[in-house]
Amino acid sequence: MFKGEIEAVGARVAADTGSLMVRARLPNPDHKLLRGMFANVKVLTGEPKELVTVPRTAVTYGLYGDSVWVVKEGKTEPQKTASTGDVAVPEPQLTAERRFVRVGPSREETVAILEGVSAGEQVVTSGQLKLHPDARIKIDNSRPLTPQAQRPKQ
Image (tube, rainbow, N blue to C red; front, top):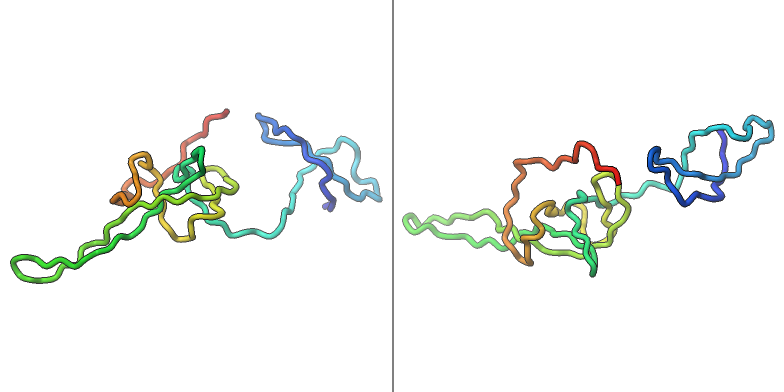
């Protein structure tokens, strides 16, 4: 194992392998490393960060900013039944709230949200074109969100 520092990173990523050229400088006093040798490299970029992530389908990219629709609970008012006078508490009304977000790095089918959404909030992942502010929504988790079998190559 050798420790060194990266001096330069190539501008192109190979489309077929996903590799890129990196130039690094590392001490080699015993001449164990020779010119042209192949190496597996791990780059340490700092401490891990906790990020809020959402599915890629939840983010609406737009000219004036990226946004996410967040599920909010509306007010519920107890309703009396006409025949018995009992008070029934209905389920809370769910509404949609559009929030502009600052998008961070993405990995596969998830995108990091740096500002605009807190951890634990529910976001809308489909049907965003039909929404408007304070639109009533219903959550349908009968079909789980699954990634595509294979992403198309660009």
